[in-house]
Length: 32
Image (cartoon, rainbow, N blue to C red):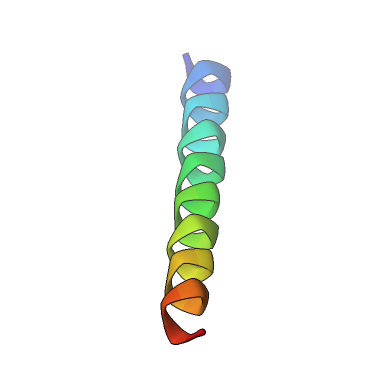
């Protein structure tokens, strides 16, 4: 269970990172 929980947390962090990058890209497009 610990390994599963860790990999699940890692997946959530990756998803948040991708989401954050999309927001940054959108903000950059809006500034232009």
